[in-house]
Image 1 (cartoon, rainbow, N blue to C red):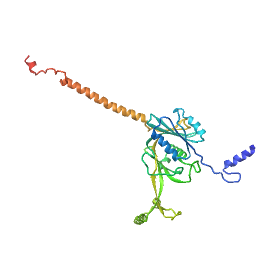
Image 2: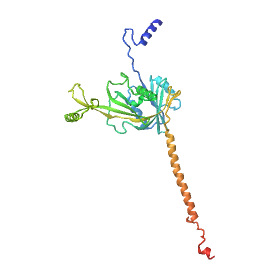
Image 3: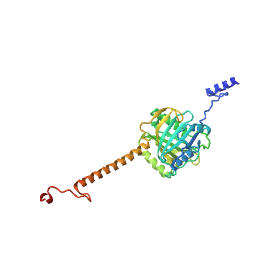
Length: 322
């Protein structure tokens, strides 16, 4: 039996079965989504939106602790998940997102800002529940090693594998990841196809005739050639939501632990921002109080304060003809 097992393992490593048919590697990705205690209703709505967009995810109850995050590896193993998306709320205001590849890592900690949920701004777009998205990454992700690592982890979390649970064989929305000001801007759009009228076709043809250099790659109107007439359709993007911004803080080598392999030196904690605002307000108050004390002292020297007699001057009649 040992010899048979060794022969089968060798053929599996070479990428072929016993019959010579190559083995197809399955993309098995499952995401565990959960949060800590203290999240607000907007944070909870974001969690539900992401759970609806990711059919290969599993939602769990709130985690009681914020210090022993290594327990998330046990939860991921319990639910047979190899990716963890953890929402950590602090002071009922700040939201931090931990993205980890369980159980060996790496782990990325980000600060979430400018959150807008799907139902908050009444986005007109819509997509089929359980459909698979197209991930669109900015070219800036290939400029540095830590951005390449972030891109790979985002791909593992937000890319829905083919044939995963609760998925449908349709691709009808796009998730865009763009980097600006050292932040990751995340948007979700619906791929909408609308029929083109004859007037629009004539207008487009007249515009194309007037142009000398035709760029066929940037045309918005494409010929479908499918059943039901095979007319022209116009493809456009309509935002679905949610939309939010992530600021990377640190990247850990392990899963919720280990040495720090990247740290964002430009990140400013929201606690420090609030403390500086309080200090600036306190500084303005101290300046006003000092000005009030100086004004009162000057009035006292001139004898202009109520209830206080002014000292007689040297040129008054009482002093000259005393």
